[in-house]
Image 1 (tube, rainbow, N blue to C red):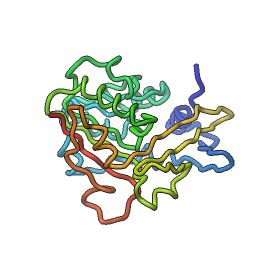
Image 2: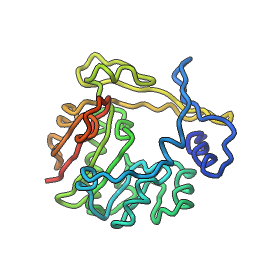
Image 3: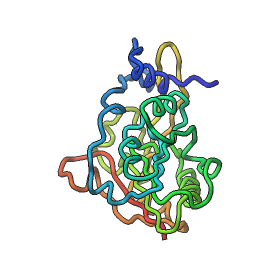
Length: 239
């Protein structure tokens, strides 16, 4: 089994057994991963976000299950993760349907027309790795969702100057594109290198051409917030 320092650290934190920090590393540059803040806070009710979602709902890259715990009280919710440690943690926390599944191979895990809506918060959609990978993801998402489905996606915005300050950022000469590359370390174990292909809102629109999806709404940060953000939120609607 490949090392999973990220998932192991989150599970140890949940069990009260974490004795070392989870470290993200990009060469000589490091940062400590804020597990409690990022994965174990309570879901904050959000009328804008919730207005785009309905069940059955797919939570892609569900982490420790914070959002799934909230939405499963409203309608059927399926939470997926690629880490067995995270799936076990979600189940222990009370997530009704937590599964080991990769958001980039949805057709291998779910039947056609399974979901009414889906979301991926945390910029993990940019782990598609390339624009072709993004288009393949959109095809898989189309397969498992019904007509008129809606999806909320979240990503870093390489078209903004402030995004260049994020951890492990790599520039790309192509407008609207960039990279992030790093790996995690915990308890003597090193995880696989993560390659994020950062793409702008306009590049996302381009990727939907020829697919059943269209960008119905997009904004930098939360659409109801006036604070500056280095990420975007986009709603895709299926024709």
